[in-house]
Image (tube, rainbow, N blue to C red; front, side):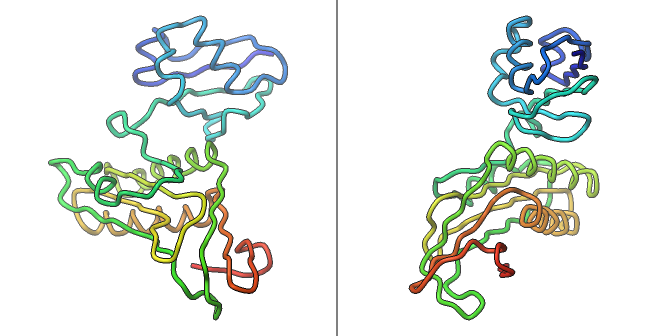
Length: 223
């Protein structure tokens, strides 16, 4: 089958083209096509582990199956080459995340921390467990950041979310947004947090003394 490849920024420069048709086997995944490109254009190999995939302008994960006439875009990291979305089991460093968005042209920085609380819906929480589909989650978070830029203009964005077991008082998510003025920074940060909570494939289990539940699967809800 034939698809179209699109490259941007540093990938375009390294390969020497911005778009080409490419014949691949039926049922090829985005990752498999990327490997074909890396073999044909060795200069692309250093970007293999950090480029994102989009098919027909929609972000997809590496295992997405391509079909005839699809447009596969390989998208390099944005915002100065730094990855903006991180899913990690490690403790989040709010100060470092906030510092990463600072630039001389930005006059406002808004940082949001989500913290594990002890009470929810009248129950005492012992701890939380987070699970995530990491490649898809990070790609969707990046898309949310792009949407925020489209709404509020150029800005620095960094987003991190933890997985695994989190104790009461631990930080589960950090979103930092820097922009020219506070209004845009506040509004963009809230938008990003709200969209992450509703769109990104991250799941939360509450564990209590007398039971447990994946939040959202039994009509329950939590902010």
